[in-house]
Amino acid sequence: MEITFRWFGENNDTVSLKDIKQIPNVKGVVWALHHLPPGVVWDENEIAEEVKLIQSHGFHAEVVESVNVHESIKIGNKDRDKYIANYKQSIENLAKHGVKVICYNFMPVFDWIRTNMRKALPDGSTALFYERKKVDNVDVRTMADSVLNSTDLTMPGWEPEKIEQLEALIKDYENINEDSLRNNLAYFLQEVLPIAEQNGVKLAIHPDDPPWSVFGLPRIVKNEQDLEQIVSMSSSSSNCLTFCSGALGANQSNDIVELVKKFAERSPFLHLRNVKNFDNGDFIETSHLTSDGSVNLTGVVKHLNDIDYNGYVRPDHGRHIWNEKSRPGYGLYDRALGIMYIHGLWDASNLSKGGR
Ligand code: DNO
Image (spheres, rainbow, N blue to C red):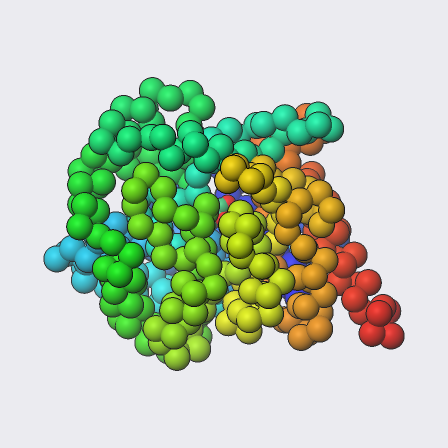
């Protein structure tokens, strides 16, 4: 297991590379050129500069999260080949600078969604919260308005330029169901995987968050069956998953330990976090501690240890604690605690095998 830490760049993050350096045993920084819109080629000079900066602090920069996929590719529009060609070029450019894993997602229009970024937990910290009926009740036809005017429906993974195009985008998805979305993913993979493979890059799809359909749009990376279908789309060694315990864990019927047993070998990159689920479909993010939430992180890390997992692992969203002001879910303190917890579980598993 190689511990990494997500960082949004010098002008985009409250956490510095120097801060990250003080968390024990972090080997790599997970990065992206966050200012680039989906669909463009990632420029080699810009890549080189960011990689150099990360490396100058003693980290590797082998994992990128994310190279976002243009909506035309997900919809299967006529112009998708142009964006696919750009994606291939970005893969090549990243590989030249040592990138080995590219995380991406295939969620229509929206990335991850929460309804409250700072919901109070009983201990006085705050965390990301999802109130299911608030999203279920949003009418897609009036959504552009409600997103713009709402103070509490927030899209943390939102690409702001999409707001203007929202109505048109939703319309483009009118005839897209799970099957056609899956076909469009298969088309994309068929095109990009050979390039990824030639360049020694793994493309690791991130699960949908939350793992169910939102605003009437299809989602195809939600559960065991979906993951199986994706894995079997291509036997290329570059056709991989980003295993996210929190995203998948928000669906109570996903058994995360069983899933990690099944898919760890196909997942070069793992996001570990906990989430507490409620019967009405709401969920709140908690500390990483197994007993704080619904996800058995102890079982997950034990399995990783059992198979001597050697991929990249990062702590995922943390709570906001000790008055830290940070990007929602991406503060320093609780993610650092998460890392120490993951290390602790790993070392305890070593111990139980007679190691140290
Ligand atoms: C949220 C993240 C996601 C993830 C993308 C991957 O915190 O896990 O935004 O980066 O979905 O493409």
